[in-house]
Image (cartoon, rainbow, N blue to C red; front, side):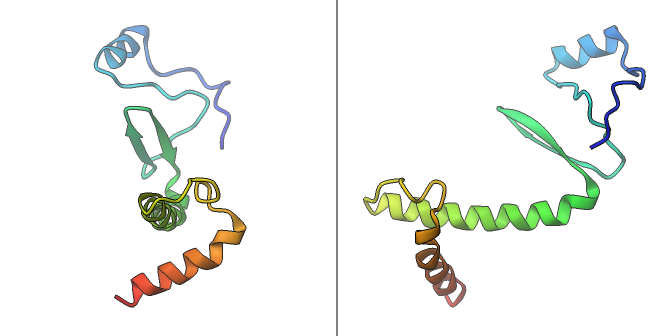
Length: 104
Protein backbone atom coordinates (compact mmCIF):
# COMPACT_ATOMS: atom_id res chain seq x y z
CA UNK A 1 0.00 0.00 0.00
CA UNK A 2 1.34 3.38 -0.97
CA UNK A 3 0.78 6.31 1.37
CA UNK A 4 -0.27 9.17 -0.84
CA UNK A 5 -1.06 11.68 1.90
CA UNK A 6 1.74 13.95 0.68
CA UNK A 7 0.44 13.98 -2.92
CA UNK A 8 -1.98 16.84 -3.65
CA UNK A 9 -5.59 15.70 -4.05
CA UNK A 10 -6.59 15.95 -7.71
CA UNK A 11 -10.29 16.28 -6.92
CA UNK A 12 -11.65 19.76 -6.54
CA UNK A 13 -14.38 20.38 -3.95
CA UNK A 14 -16.87 20.75 -6.82
CA UNK A 15 -15.98 17.35 -8.32
CA UNK A 16 -15.95 15.71 -4.87
CA UNK A 17 -19.43 17.14 -4.13
CA UNK A 18 -20.71 15.86 -7.48
CA UNK A 19 -19.33 12.37 -6.84
CA UNK A 20 -20.85 12.31 -3.37
CA UNK A 21 -24.23 13.43 -4.69
CA UNK A 22 -24.41 10.45 -7.05
CA UNK A 23 -23.24 8.02 -4.38
CA UNK A 24 -19.60 7.59 -5.36
CA UNK A 25 -17.20 7.49 -2.43
CA UNK A 26 -13.73 8.88 -2.76
CA UNK A 27 -10.93 6.70 -1.47
CA UNK A 28 -8.11 8.37 0.39
CA UNK A 29 -4.59 7.30 1.37
CA UNK A 30 -4.55 4.52 -1.22
CA UNK A 31 -3.06 4.92 -4.67
CA UNK A 32 -5.17 3.25 -7.34
CA UNK A 33 -3.45 2.23 -10.55
CA UNK A 34 -4.75 1.34 -13.98
CA UNK A 35 -5.90 -2.28 -13.91
CA UNK A 36 -6.82 -2.29 -10.21
CA UNK A 37 -10.24 -3.71 -9.49
CA UNK A 38 -12.87 -1.90 -7.44
CA UNK A 39 -15.53 -4.12 -5.87
CA UNK A 40 -18.38 -2.65 -3.90
CA UNK A 41 -21.84 -3.13 -2.53
CA UNK A 42 -24.21 -1.22 -0.26
CA UNK A 43 -21.82 -1.68 2.67
CA UNK A 44 -18.68 -0.29 1.06
CA UNK A 45 -15.97 -0.81 -1.51
CA UNK A 46 -12.46 -2.20 -1.72
CA UNK A 47 -9.67 -1.72 -4.23
CA UNK A 48 -7.85 -4.88 -5.24
CA UNK A 49 -4.42 -4.23 -6.75
CA UNK A 50 -4.12 -5.83 -10.18
CA UNK A 51 -1.11 -7.85 -9.01
CA UNK A 52 -3.24 -9.52 -6.31
CA UNK A 53 -6.45 -10.02 -8.32
CA UNK A 54 -5.90 -13.69 -9.18
CA UNK A 55 -5.00 -14.60 -5.58
CA UNK A 56 -7.97 -12.66 -4.18
CA UNK A 57 -10.35 -14.30 -6.69
CA UNK A 58 -9.05 -17.78 -5.80
CA UNK A 59 -9.42 -17.07 -2.07
CA UNK A 60 -12.92 -15.64 -2.59
CA UNK A 61 -14.06 -18.80 -4.41
CA UNK A 62 -12.61 -20.94 -1.62
CA UNK A 63 -14.40 -18.82 1.00
CA UNK A 64 -17.70 -19.15 -0.89
CA UNK A 65 -17.24 -22.92 -0.82
CA UNK A 66 -16.65 -22.94 2.95
CA UNK A 67 -19.70 -20.73 3.44
CA UNK A 68 -21.84 -23.05 1.28
CA UNK A 69 -20.83 -25.92 3.55
CA UNK A 70 -21.64 -23.89 6.66
CA UNK A 71 -25.02 -22.74 5.32
CA UNK A 72 -25.91 -26.33 4.43
CA UNK A 73 -25.06 -27.48 7.95
CA UNK A 74 -27.01 -24.63 9.59
CA UNK A 75 -30.06 -25.38 7.41
CA UNK A 76 -29.78 -28.97 8.64
CA UNK A 77 -30.23 -27.66 12.18
CA UNK A 78 -26.66 -27.19 13.43
CA UNK A 79 -25.47 -24.18 15.38
CA UNK A 80 -23.24 -21.64 13.67
CA UNK A 81 -20.65 -22.21 16.39
CA UNK A 82 -17.64 -23.81 14.75
CA UNK A 83 -18.99 -23.04 11.28
CA UNK A 84 -18.70 -19.24 11.13
CA UNK A 85 -15.73 -19.06 11.06
CA UNK A 86 -14.90 -22.66 10.27
CA UNK A 87 -13.13 -24.19 13.29
CA UNK A 88 -10.03 -26.33 12.78
CA UNK A 89 -11.82 -29.38 14.16
CA UNK A 90 -14.55 -29.00 11.47
CA UNK A 91 -12.05 -28.72 8.60
CA UNK A 92 -11.83 -32.52 7.95
CA UNK A 93 -15.62 -32.67 7.67
CA UNK A 94 -15.55 -29.72 5.27
CA UNK A 95 -12.76 -31.34 3.20
CA UNK A 96 -14.84 -34.54 2.83
CA UNK A 97 -17.89 -32.50 1.87
CA UNK A 98 -15.91 -30.51 -0.71
CA UNK A 99 -14.37 -33.68 -2.20
CA UNK A 100 -17.81 -35.27 -2.52
CA UNK A 101 -19.13 -32.15 -4.31
CA UNK A 102 -16.26 -32.23 -6.78
CA UNK A 103 -17.09 -35.85 -7.57
CA UNK A 104 -20.68 -34.99 -8.51
